[in-house]
Length: 380
Image 1 (cartoon, rainbow, N blue to C red):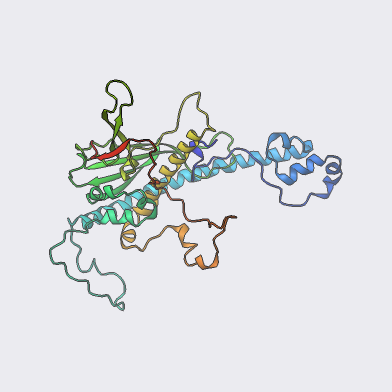
Image 2: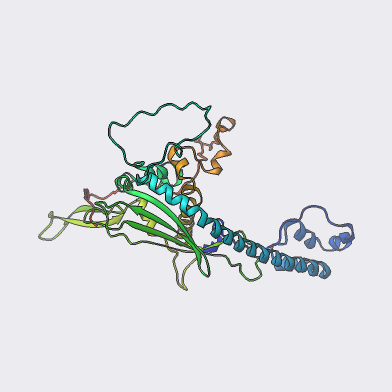
């Protein structure tokens, strides 16, 4: 079963041997010939202590010595990552005034000079942009456009989120260091008709420690996430919808009469991001259950979205706004579609091999009973 410390960028591996790289040394031939199981262990990989014990004692001794050295390699890798973190902290302080100046330009608080607005070489001919019919302050809908131009965050945005995200004025990344390490994503909003807060925060907590005798360390492990509670104004909560159903009484003296049942249910929304998924807990949790596996998948997806905002979107916000930025993994496939044909099943249906993404599926469930559904405005 997958644990929360086994997500992308956060995998602490257990001690499993790798596959054999090829031939068997000549001096082992006699021993291997006498014990075919030993040869199989080498060919298939020493996947456990039981198979390791099938090797001659002197080889097991040497393999264990190599593993002890590997543990020391891992300890050095952990120390390396911690020192990288210190370097990140140093340069984060130097990036901060640049982010702050960007925010003043986007909001319209500061107007760049002609010199500051000059970009590119003098040889490049730049088409003259049309003048606005009315004065425009800053760059309207900057952060909404940024989020819509990234394929991962775009899938989180529903139509009912757009009017709210028009009020998004800035996104600030705040890494924190020390005994507890992680980062906060601050989302700033102008006063609006939807909720009372002007700032919403998503916090991710990470660990830079390896398990005892870990044989590899691939980066910080995910610990947990927390999000701001949102104080929705009456009837403006876009994370839920109110369903009304009419039910007919089937028997008794009131047979045929109808009553209206009202139920509030969750619906897809960008603002679900501030209610991070949680893994089931307790001694009776079945880590092989579909519920547990789905929770792990949602947690992993949530962490990946937060990491994309931190590492990709905020540092290159202007390039996402202009549409010049793209995710690195897409660059390897640009223009190559013509080189491949879609696979087909026996019934002739092709497979789609696109990115899975992190959005929601919005298909409506069919209701087979005789009740009539009547949509109603959501209430906070």
